[in-house]
Amino acid sequence: MFEEKTISSEDVYTGDVLKFRIDKVELPDGNIADREILEHPGAVGIVGITNAGKIVLIKQYRKAIDLEILEIPAGKLEKNEHPYDAAIREFEEEAGYKASNVKFLFDAYMLPGCSDAKIYFYIAKDLKLVSPDRDDDEFIEVLEFDISEIRRMLSLNKFVDAKTIIALTRAIEYEYGSSYNE
Image 1: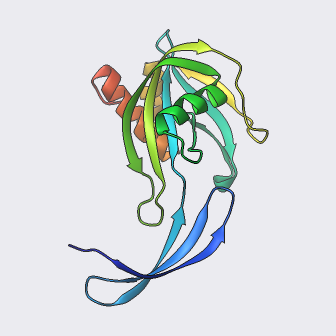
Image 2 (image 1 turned 90 degrees about the vertical axis):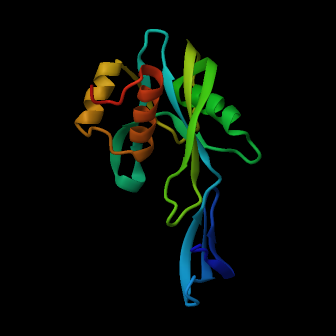
């Protein structure tokens, strides 16, 4: 087994959401190395499917990459919040839909080489429009797309967000029994 034993851990930065630390580890061969770790509370991503069969996406500006992008509604877990509850809350806050049918799809670590960030993915159906309750710093446009449009956008690499690409591909497979290429 290629396990790395932590010798020491130093907190470098603690913010409102993220924490950065450097772990000194002993490698399987006995050598010592540093590992830069970004701690994250975890998040949820939701693939919403309207009663008309359209997929709900949001458009927002992402400063880290200086781009306005299309993505699935998503957000971080609050302290001690169950991912299922976070999915319902985030979908209502960002997309403005209350879902009465929410199913767990899968979970995944997004950057396991440097972060413990894990995203729990859900499919939300049986949607009812409500007023979104966005954070003061969120500027979001909600859009709906036919499944054929989503498949086309996936095949043409129109999405730049990994969580969105993975979630849409898996949700299409789960809901429609095929991948994005027909």
